[in-house]
Each structure stands twice: as C-alpha cells, then as structure tokens.
Image 1 (spheres, rainbow, N blue to C red):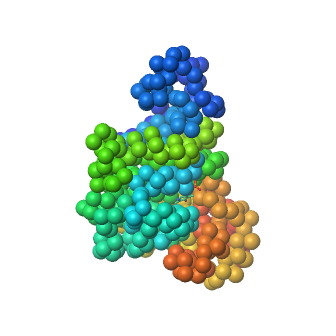
Image 2: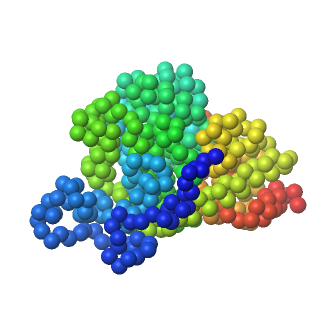
Image 3: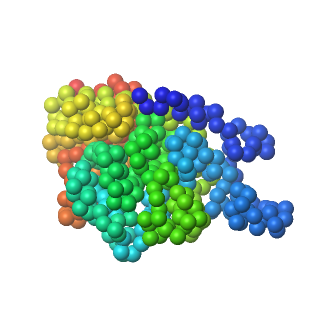
Length: 414
Ligand SMILES: *Cc1c(COP(=O)(O)O)cnc(C)c1O
C-alpha cells in the first residue's frame, strides 16, 4: 500500500502558508506584480543575497508560486521544488544545470516527442550528445555510461510505448558509476509514485497534466531529492564545498532558472495549486477508469493489442505494481488493423475528444505517429518504435459505461 502514513488530500488541504497572508486569505492570492519594495537599502541587500527569504522580482520568486512549490514539497517527499512555465522548461533547465560541452545523456529513444527532439537536435548543437539505448537492458545501459555521462534519463512509463523500467535497478547502476538518475514522472503522480523510494535524484513533472486541474494551464516542476553527491559533476563540484547535497538546487535557483527566465506565472500557480487540491481524487478515478477500459478493449475483436502496465498479462505488470501499486496512471495505448482504421475510429467518437495532452478531465485520443512524431524523418520514426496502427487514449472523468459505449459505437460494434 502506498502512502499509508499520510493522505495526500489531507496533507495539501491542511498545509499553512510560510507567512500568514496579510488579509488572512485561505487560498494564496495571485500576486501578479513584477517587483517587491523594501523599507531600507539594507533589507534590500539582504533579500538580494538570499538571506531573508523575501521576494525581489517575479522572474526569480513570487509568493503565489512559492506557496504552490511549498505544497509540492510537502506531498512529494522532495527536499526542494521549483515551478517553471512548462514541463519542457523543467527538462531544459535541468540539463542547463548539469550538462556541458562534451557530456552525454544516457537515455532511451522512447521519450515524449519534444524531449526526444531536445536531446536529439537542440542539445546536440551545444556539444551534448544523447546516447539512445535500451534502458530495460541494464548491461547495455552500463556499457553506455562513462565519465562524461551527466545523467541517466528515463520516463517512468514511456509514452506511448508503455514500458516501465525498474527504477531501483537503474538508480543502483547509475550511482555505482557516479551518475545521477533523472526521471520524468508526469504519467504517475505522487499519490501512487514516490520517487525517492527508488533512488531517483531529480524528478521532473509536467504539471500541465494531472496537477493543473483539468488542463487549465501549462506548467512544469523540478524536484530535487538531494541525495546525489554532486562532487562527481564537473558543473557542480566547486559548489558542493559550500552547498553540499543542495548544490544542484543552489545552481538552478541562483543562476540557471534566473537566466533562462522561465519561472512559472502566478496566475498558473494559482490555478495549479487549486488543481492540486483535487488531484488525488481525479487521478485515482481516471486511473481506475483507464484500467477498466484496458480490460474492456482486450475483449473487443477489432482491437489487436492493448498496452497498459496494470493489465495482468502485461510484461511490465510486476515492476509496475511494485512502483505504482493499484494506480499505474490514466494513459493506455492500443492497436487496430491499420492507420485508416484508427482514423475512421477516431472520427466516429462522440465523447472521447480528438486532442493531444494527457490527464485532462475529458478523455482524449490521439494517433501519435501522424501527429507528435509526424515531422520526424523515417530513421527517427523507426527509432521511436511507434507503429502506424497505434492509438493513445487518456482516460478522463466521464462515466465508464458512457466511454465504453462511445468506443463500441466508434468500432461499429453496436
Ligand atoms: C506533456 C509532457 C511533457 C512536456 O510538458 P509540457 O508541460 O507540455 O511542456 C514532458 N514529459 C511528458 C511525459 C509529458 O507527458
């Protein structure tokens, strides 16, 4: 059982602000201004040196965003969280902090489309090379890590290939080679997944998904578990003498995030903080619906194969159960005859929406190869292993039977 000792909803709803709001507001108001005023030059100096914890400028920190970050730290078990303007901003900021010209990232080609593109094209231009390998094969991973490896990076369930790596084994291997493990945990949030339990060093989350509260806004989070010895990192080794295990966060907060300028907006933080209050409820319902849809799809003859790690016959069932318990998320994929059948099925759907994104309150469907991976050339399309007859479904909060009936009518089975 996950989180027996504390209920996430209670923890979020019962958390108080660091400093009481001046009006006693029970939800942190939106502090939308750019700058904060000081009574004296001395206080201003203190704030700029980070000695008083006071806000100076909203690109660096902001009361509304800080209250959101505090809630994330409180429920995730991380030591520090920073909120940024998107999941991609979070991933970019991590590699701006730890990568360097000549460094490599050991990862899989089975990645969210823009993460794949960031590693393949954007970082390459700065001398950072992605080593794409099979992260399910630990010997292959071991062969790819060397003293220029700045991180092993994986998604906890790959999207849309639906593989779940054994994170404990991966972190032990990475740590034995003095390399941090960085995971994207967007697809299974904290009610079901506790990253620090499996040795994860840095966690990145697209808060656009479960947290936002129904796709209200774009956002991203970096969570630092502060367990890695950053003296092994050429970018951080000097800082370790002063900051110890906080070296990554100090570098990120004091230099990188400020310079990249992608701090979360207070409007987004307000919406996502509200979203967080109902996340546990929504996530569990959507994950349950997804599991039942996976079982249902398996019984339908036009469906060739269903990929969901919570299915008993799935090759990742055991590792998925170990890491995510009863709730391996609200995303599944399945195959039909061919692309034409996928398109015809999609076009007949009346409840499930044709849209990208994951974990909206509404159920969403997409044909990944023609959309997310549509602009890749044939070589890269082969690397991502996404077949033309594959559909990705994100389960929402609609009634299960209504969703089943929508699928049945779109497959022309009723
Ligand atoms: C959506 C997503 C991202 C990117 O997040 P944005 O908020 O859209 O920038 C990264 N990783 C995964 C697994 C995602 O689903």
